[in-house]
Image 1 (cartoon, rainbow, N blue to C red):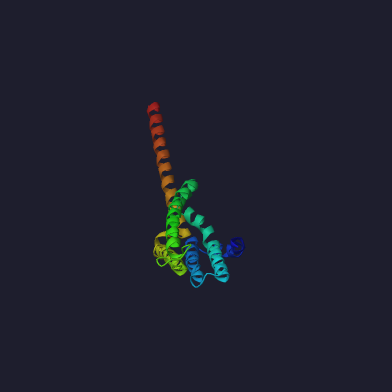
Image 2: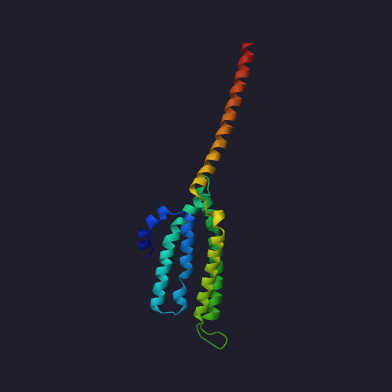
Length: 185
C-alpha cells in the first residue's frame, strides 16, 4: 500500500521541504491508532493500516533527504549510519514497553487484576507519538534548514578553503620569488 501512496505523493515531496513533510507525516501517523482506540475490528484495523501507510509514504523518503542536509560531501554514509543508530535503542524500548502493555492491559487470560483494556494500549501509543510530534514541532526552527542557507554555508566553507589555498599559493610564490631574487644577486 505504501508503494501506491508513494506514486501519488512524489510530486508533493518534490515541492515541499523535507522537514515540513516529516512533521506532517508524523502528525498523521500519530492519528493512525485512533480507529483502534474505539474498537478492535477489521474496519478499524484497515483504517489504521491505511493511515499509517499514507503517513509513512509521506515522511519516510524525506528522512534521508533531511539527514543529508547536515552532512559534508563524501561523509553521507557515515553520517546516515550514525543517525540510524538510535533506532535500535528505540526498538529495544518499544519491545519492553509493548510487552508490559500487553501483559497488563491485554492478557491472554483475564483475571481480576488484569482485564483486557486495549484502548489503554492505543492511548499510550498515541501519547508517545504525540510527544515525538511536539518535540519535532518545537525543534523546527533548529532543524528546518532552508536550501539557500545550506548553500550559503557551503559557499562560505568553499570560500574559506579557496582563501587558504590562495594564501598557500601566494606564500609559495613569494618564497619562490625571494629565492630567485637571491640567486640573481
